[in-house]
Image (tube, rainbow over all chains, first blue to last red; front, side, top):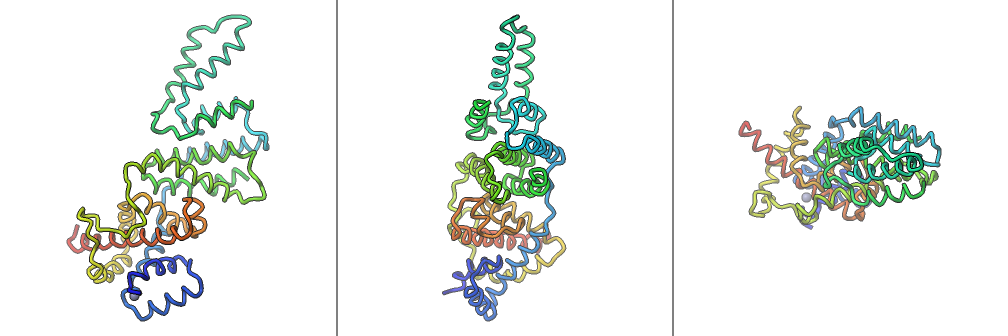
Length: 159
Length: 182
Ligand SMILES: [Zn+2]
């Protein structure tokens, strides 16, 4: 094959992903072919430099929020979080914003209504402030991951 | 276990996300989403399996969901031979590129090599960037990459190779920029 045909093998060799037979072929060819020898050197050198590239660490607050959540999940054992804890985690900003502001506000209001209907109606300002609190955290529909809504519904259902 | 996992993997998850979308805010959402799914499915986690593997499957799904939003915009066949990007669709003449491989090697020996590589990487298509990030930056093997990206092993091998060819062409362009003092 022409040298073009060696490209995939050279690349796999640079990644140590070739079989012993393939490795032997690559080594034999690259030893006698200046062009492929250089290509391989470029691949290996790029890989080496890229592996040492300084990369952004996860933002501190994100990591801390994830750690808090992890601790909470582990603290619960395998039983999962209660809805209140998930809500708290969500409000603390660590869970992804699903643009569920509306749904949650509605959910909370229904909860308030069920709790309070025996004694008195929900005061209007309480309803409004609950609504506003969640509406403020709403995000654009573009950032809503597919399936997020069903997942949450399914979760709420098993409480 | 979960906490240690967050300690160990949040950075590399963030880095992968960052290379994917080149945007800190979006990377954050992607990582949050991946860990959120992990936490949520924690009671279904089979502890005889390595947690890392479980997380990679989740990351793959997040990546796929995320990709769908972007891919409609850039529909290119990634596994076709790389073409010159100047618009005419003319492949860089192999003889010219060959002649410049020596200069590319010199460039890679320079102290600024990482800056040139980062710039060349950033200019790649998102899929090529993603696969080289996993392969070269994060040091994953083809099998792992195949799991994360949901691609057959053979496709991983050829796509890594195409991505490298594109990266090399980017470096060839940069040798020109260096020569002209740009
Ligand atoms: Zn050759």
